[in-house]
Image 1 (cartoon, rainbow, N blue to C red):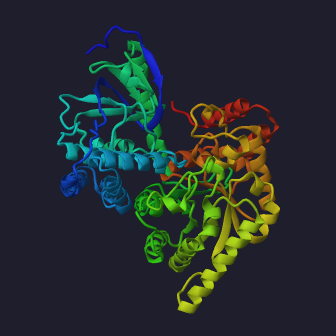
Image 2 (image 1 turned 120 degrees about the horizontal axis):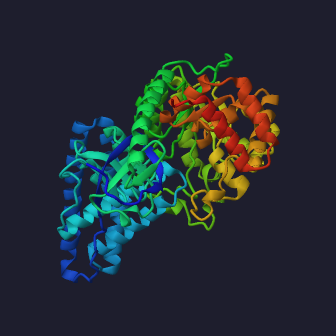
Length: 587
């Protein structure tokens, strides 16, 4: 069928699931539940609470059914998404606050639940970490379903697409994405969302292209319009011309060839053309990501974020619960190393189940968070440290403190660690007496005092995301100034060089675990600056490994030398991009 004779329009979004699709659009319109607001008579209040409890049971049954269908159709890993939804329904803080709000105000239970759940959604939406910020969608999805059940409304569904279609929506909730007809979905495009949204996870599982963040496209396109979805470059092309269709046919052929080359590189060692071995590791948050570690053949875990155990819980996990989670990862990876980062809660990552621990702050990025929180709440900190120490007897573990700003904080953290070791010895509990301790370098004051911190550290890991944010005074989740967040700013490049050189003078290895490490455009620059190890999301490993195998370390060092002499972020980026393109041939 020929494309309609309309002008071609190219819309840039964010690449979320690779691939190319061409077809007609189905615009999926969702709307929030309209919540009535009224006073409940005193004699009906017991029945009102019972109505809420009945809606919770119905919602739990519906989600369990969806989980079963997803597990059958896509697999157990994808079905784990809905465990988080079931946890929301068991969150005693959320449920308890709703009932307390009802008892205090006497307003109908829908109004009370909507108010409390909205507060939780807002708290998660403000979290800096992209993956954890997306968990606001879990709560929103469950809340909408509870409200629908309270009001007796039917849910929207993507299960009955008439023909093969490209699905376009403002956003697609986990429940919506679970209902997508796999045989009829060509691609997925959303106005909002990120690379870590559940809809994206589903799209990757179904092996369909996905592009997110194409702002307000749902207002410009109608059902039946013809589009190309380019999941490689994050582009959506409306009403593509014949020449564009021809060009994309050729691109699709080349991309498939390139993907084959990436997979082949993934099975080879990460060694440059001049024989230098490069250490490539993975960042993870959950035990379930171990399968991806094996699939992409990471040499170990360079960053195990532990916040997930706390943020998705109604209470603080016990020492034993944490130990079992850490042990499962450490034992599965042994003898490969696992670097566990101690708790990075607080500020922009509050624990909604314990709001009293996290008072609201005007500037949470520079507030009461991470190591600062842990050194005040030493009972929570010690539970975690003992759990990490116990897990260290099952493999090679390294402990890393986040947000260290100076030697005093590092010394205080190590005092608490020594107390935990003494307590475990008293218990007769085994742990690695030679456990290595290191620090995240993500605050300028830490970068400027590497020589001092090095006296008490076995390794450093640079968190480029926060380091860039603090160096440039740029809130990277603020849309108005996000364009100023520049990894290739000369201040960033020079600071990275100073950190690496200062560490190497003390014979201390340096890794990078921020987003720069997983970007094949920036990875050669980091290696040229002298970084010893790159740690990234598992799925990024093949692209970085491919580039490592296509370059020489001598060329990477020359790139770094040139970059250090430049004054413009755009010039430095262009030089890095040129380096990348010269070694990644798509022909």
